[in-house]
Amino acid sequence: MSIPKPDFTIGVEEEYLLVDLDTLDLAPAPVELMTRCSAELEGQFSPEFLECQVEIGSRVCANVAEARDDLKRLRSTVARVAKDYNLAPIAASCHPFSDWRNQHHTDKERYNHLRDDLAGVVRRMLICGMHVHVGIAYEDQRIDLMNQLKYFLPHLLALSSSSPFWQGEDTGLSCYRLTVFDNLPRTGLPPQFDSWSSFDRSVHALVDMGLIDDASKIWWDLRPSSRFPTIEARICDVSPRLETTLTLAALIQSLTRMLWRLSQKNQRWRIYDNFLLAENRWRAQRYGVESGLIDYGAHEIVPFDTLVEELITLVAEDAAALNCTAEVENARLILNRGTAAQVQRQIYQDAIHAEDTKQDALKRVVKHLIEEYHADL
Image 1 (cartoon, rainbow, N blue to C red):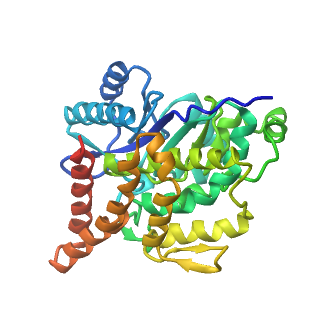
Image 2: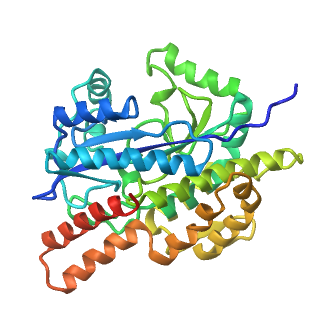
């Protein structure tokens, strides 16, 4: 059977937190804000589990340039409407000082069910992520590419890290979000499957027993989407700056095409056991880009600037074909400027050295996150 070439379309979903412009603490979204954003954004905006969270989703985009235009419109609309209620969105995976115990979940059937089903672990879900879909029409091809693409998930996590603080404390981690998220069931690295049918059988083993409704309740770092003909990368922290989001989306799109290109030459990326990949996942979660990742072929830890250059070279042909070379190469800028986690931590430390109180230093971080959200709009 002839398998058609994938179209490699992309779609991006981002979750934002809403903060009060006076206190800089989290604030629930007013009903009027939700109504106005839903009307203006026509199916591309929705509530999230907590009342202080909202989610946007881009249209299906042929390339990163289309994604930029759509995400800029979505981000700008949320910011404009929120300002009318003395609120501002921030695109960081954890709020620097707010307490999850003070938040309330959104009163919708889906979220009420999650509260009842997942109990204490879901109540701590004061976290936001970013998901990138890549269009792969053929089901078995989705599984094959997913098995190989998960090797690169730690690289993406490290570049995206934006959650060093939790409840007013520097956690020492670059991505604290996963520490919270991994308490949920059906999370983490995806298992390896031989085919779409083997994946489908596994999902239906749980659905048929009434344990989950469908595959949308599987929250792996990378999964076949339950709604679209895509593979969905879910590993990334949400990025304060739009251009960082676009670099990550371009890398995911280009890596997927690179792996498909290998398959056209009867080649494939080596598949490592999740036990080994999880070590790199932890290194990315803990250190971000500061301590490198393990190259299991070379049996050494490779510095992250070297890894970024290797990635750019690896997908150069694919980025050119997808018209996203500039965005892929902007991964260097993330390293030069610092990840969102590194920048937040530096702002906090500078404020402490300037003899700010701990709370004022954390508020400086929130002000910075508000500025970053608007920087590329």
